[in-house]
Length: 47
Image (cartoon, rainbow, N blue to C red):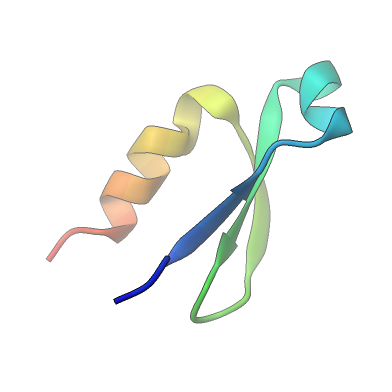
């Protein structure tokens, strides 16, 4: 239960079209183009 990912849209997102995604469990952060967010999360939520 909880939020497995945090997605941050910031001032840089306006410029580069990317967001920052942070994994709740590992605290890993990556910068990813907005059009790749859905596939990134789908891949990590498979059972």
